[in-house]
Amino acid sequence: MAGKKYHEAAKGIDAEKRYSLDEALKLVAKPTAKFDETVEIAVRLNVDPRQADQNVRGTVVLPHGTGRTVRVLVLTKGDKEREAREAGADFVGGEDLIKKIQEENWLDFDRVVATPDVMSMVGRIAKILGPRGLMPNPKVGTVTFDVAKAVSEVKAGKVDFRVDKAGVIHAPMGKVSFGAEKLIENAQALLAAIWRAKPASAKGNYVKGVAVSSTMGPGVRVDPAAASREVARAA
Image: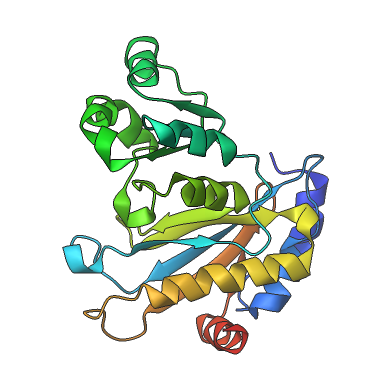
């Protein structure tokens, strides 16, 4: 059942209107819960995710982070273990931690980085990590020998995005406590990355719809054309 603050917030939003990005995030930045809500964006794209060349995905480091404390597991061996620890990884190991995940279903981490030389071992836990979106992938920079860079980017607020079967990208972009200005800058960075990931085969208007919302608040629809202009100005 929606609370009083939700109803108050909903009263200030015109459900039929397409707001500018600035206007929408100023509305979303008003708290509707007793905890610090996550702010998310949903972007509906004019693509067919069933086609391999239109399966839009990418990464972006948000200027102000996500507001989350991310626990990073690095799977590697040799000197790279020390490099990972010095970069701030929360858990570092190889065969031992892979075995722990396999036998104990241990999943006390939010992101996984792995070096290419251990990926054959990581494959043993692909069925555990994959469905949870935790499997390391070179396309998003989590399979790399540069573990220091990968860890620092994740800790700084790196966001992975990928279009779902319905052609929509859902991604977090901060907390209500950030305030409208920081949320706007994070949204611009995320939208710019999605625009850059536009497939060459995509026809017509690439972005069909944009909406932003907080965890407990109402959604606010954004004018895709206005958002595109704002992103271009910020680039």
